Amino acid sequence: MRALARNTSMQVLVAAIAAAVFGLLWPETGAQLKPLADTFIALIKLVIAPVVFLVVVSGIVSAGNLKSVGRIALKAIIYFEVVTTLGMLIGLAAVNLLQPGAGVAPPAGASEDVTDYVKGGAERTFAEWITHMIPDNAVGAFAAGEVLQVLIFAVLFALALLALPAEIGEPIARGCTRLAEVFFSMIRFIMYLAPIGTFGAVAYTVGKYGPETLTALMKLVGVSILALAVFMLVVLVPICRMAGFSFLRLVRALRRELFIVLGTSSSESVMPQLMARLEEFGCKRSVVGLVVPTGYSFNLDGVAVVIPICVVFIGQVYGVPLSIGDQLLLFLVFLVLSKGTAGVTGSAFVTLANTVAAVRLVPIAGLALVLSVDRFLSLIRAVTNVLGNAVAAVVVARWEEGGLDRERFEQSIGTPRKEKVHAADHQHS
Image 1 (cartoon, rainbow, N blue to C red):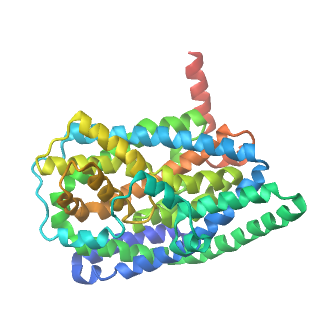
Image 2: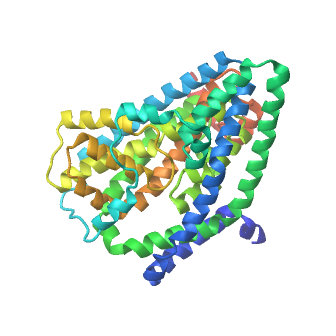
């Protein structure tokens, strides 16, 4: 019992349940507890940019040469594009087959929150997005928490280190590795506050939107959950099996991080811990340092599945059917606009707003419809994002020669021996 009390996963789960009850019993008070969640996420965001920079730099330098770095990056990008494309297709299939928007009306009063919620959600062209990727000020990228810009700067810094003589580059690389340990230690301290952050987030969501609004849009949430479950079963589970590890063992190994994601609705809230855990599973830092930060911008599987569902759902509600050609346009636009999305709560809604504004196929007023349940959609999106990036890192590590410590991998998430024997018997038969 005492061990359970000290278990962060259990504390977060208990906090989430208590917060849901609190939000139902005292909704006005619960709706005012959002600062608890915001403060916890702010503390995590405080260390994300430095951790990304330090892990990427030490990871690239440990790869040893530019050829290895380019090979890992190319494998990761190919994997990201294939998997997110499959996710979008599953989302479009689910919303067209199940028609969740039929008979649903926009909730009263939701539209007044849209403007505040979509700060920075203005339409951005592809050229503007490319330009925005490159930081015009290295310090500014860290100050603004622009993960993609920090990633670009870290890659350039690491490549410059590789180009320097060993007597100059190696001490700096070792310093980055030591500094990374300091920041991971900070994260361990911050994680003690995870139950408080979770309580604030869940109490705010239940108190703010209440059971009535949620019931009205249960179809959208249900179809999204179903589509994400299908994505995991049809895409992620077979990928894990082909790569020689167990999806269920991976979920169990990451349960603490997943509870925190469920509580905060943010996949970015566990990004540093996820990188540390993947190294514990045997993935080399040279792979983790490139794949995970890049994945948070290019491999948001949950966003890829849910955003197309939301756009078509808005069209169904407002009686604006989308043809195959319209949905192909939506597909192509989303391929561009989904890149560079941060993993914090609300950023996927910004992507939705950008997509709706770019395709001009459904009423922008429909954003208010999705907003009332976006907090709940963000829970399942964020969990899928984390699992998708974890799977990606392990798969790329398996592809990369020397990218995986086999012994640690087998002990942590590798396919259990019984399953291997069964698979071998099945092949012989």
